[in-house]
Length: 131
Image 1: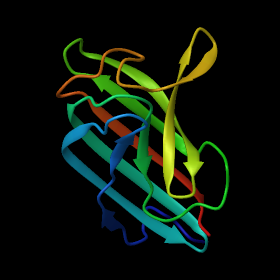
Image 2 (image 1 turned 180 degrees about the vertical axis):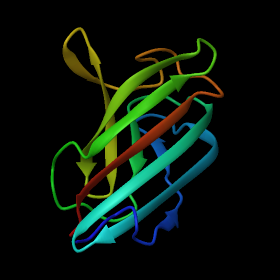
Image 3 (image 1 turned 90 degrees about the vertical axis):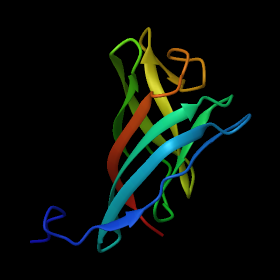
Image 4 (image 1 turned 180 degrees about the horizontal axis):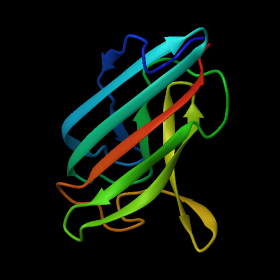
């Protein structure tokens, strides 16, 4: 039996981009492991400047599917609040971030679900099939 918890993890640096101007980050760490064609991954980013537009986070290995690939949390450091987010494949090498608003999914931007500010953070983890 293959167990991702006992597999060797490889570090990668996740990159946060946006459809407008890219946000800046003060720290970005990530790791992943593969078992066969399945990639298990996690990423943590701390934002220092919000940028503008829809947010995307890079994946460590190219994905060959179009689906939600995990879950995450967007933390508002000033309000001590958190929002559950869903990373969903945007292209093979990045995910778009979604949150639920009044029962519908909306994409995370610099201004929603709340105004993103310095010190806010994103944590993501999940798995997907690589190419």
